[in-house]
Structures are given as C-alpha cells and as structure tokens.
Image (tube, rainbow, N blue to C red; front, side, top):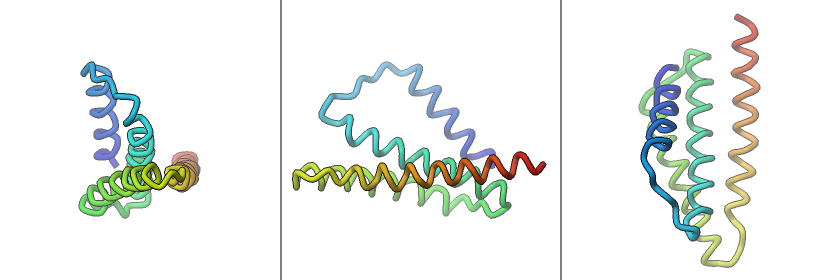
Length: 109
C-alpha cells in the first residue's frame, strides 16, 4: 500500500516544485491523464488494503490507463467528438468506488 501513496506524494511534490506550465492545447489530455493516474493510485491503495497488491499490475495499469485516456482524448479531438468524457466518466466512477471501499476498510479497523 505504501507504493501508491509514495508515488502520489512524490508526484505532488515534483508538481509543486517544478515550474512547468502546460500549453492550453494539452490541458484536455493532461486532465484525463491525471484522472487515469489517480484511478490507478486509488486502485493500488484498495488492493493494498485487500492484501492483493502486485507491483507489476500496478505499474502496467498506471501506464496503460494513462495512455488509453490520452489516446481517447486525442482520437476524440481528431474526430471532433468529446471522447474524453467517456474516460472522465469511467475514471470518475471508479475513483469514487475505490474511495468508498478504502473508507470502509479503514473504518473496519
């Protein structure tokens, strides 16, 4: 469970320290990629609490979710269809589900 939390903390620290500004054209991709990454982190925390955490599954899920979300945003932009909303909806639902399960695990202890 410590690996997703460590990764999230490290990413937040790097994001706050490094002064990188995102061009407006990439904001859509970045927002979906951040949602996908957060989904992986919450999923990893959930798996850790359920004693099912696997480093390889977490790392591959993190990158595949992020790339899929960015790819959906790119294809949607090229087609003129807001495909990124599908990723936002899917990751948003999973985030809230994982958060609810994490909360229940913590409250049971």
